[in-house]
Length: 265
Image (cartoon, rainbow, N blue to C red; front, side, top):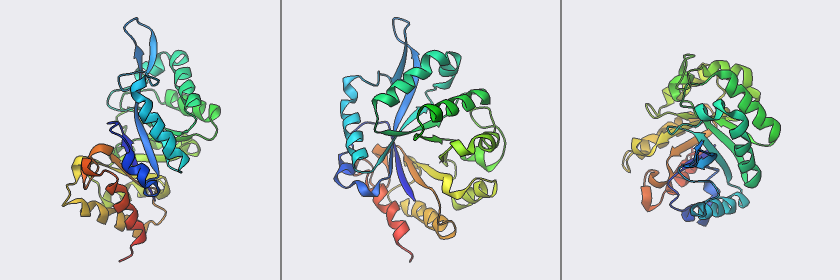
C-alpha cells in the first residue's frame, strides 16, 4: 500500500527527509499554462515559472527524496485549471511540459487532475504522447469518487469508465478524491464498478479528520486492507495540514498509515 502526499504549500519536506521509508510518493502541485505579461506562452508551477529560484529548495528536496526511493510526481491542473489552455494550443504548451520532465529527471510520474470540461480525444492524445515520449513515466488521474462510483460524466465532462476502457493499459493509478465520503463503502462501490483495487489510491483532505477522529480514517484503511490486500494506497491533500498532527509534523500521517499494513489486531 502506497502512502502519498500532494505538496503545494512548499513549507519544506525536512520531516520526511529524516525518515523517508514511510512515504512512497510526493505529488508536486500544480502545473498550469498561460500567457505572461508580455503575452508570451509559459508553463507555470502555481504562479511562477518552474525554474524560478523560489522553487530551488522544492526541487532539491524532491531530488533528495527520489534518491532515497520516494517517487516524485507532478500534478497538472486541479482547481486552477490547465487543460483548456493546453488543448487549445497543444503544439505550443505540450513541449513545455515535456521539456520540464526532461529537465527534472527525478520526476517519475504525471498526475492529471482534469477539472475543466474537455474532449476525451484530447485526453487520449495527452496520455498517448506522454507514454510515447517517456516510456517509464507513470500516468495517474485524479477523479472525484462519484466519477468512479457510476459511469456518469465527471468534472471533466467525460466518462471515466470510457476513458478507463480505452486507456487502462496506460493508466497506472487512480488517485480518487474521496472528500465527500472517505469510506469503505465508497471504495467497494468503485471496485464493484470495474476498477481494480490495486489501481486505487483513496484520497482525503486534511480537514476531513481531526487529531481525535483520525482513527476513523485508519479504520477505513484497515477494513479495506483486510478484504483487498492489493489495495493501491492512500493520499492526503495537502502535506502541510496532514492529520493527525498537521503543521507540527505532517509526516505522522504516513507513519500511522503504514502501521495499518503491519498491524492485524
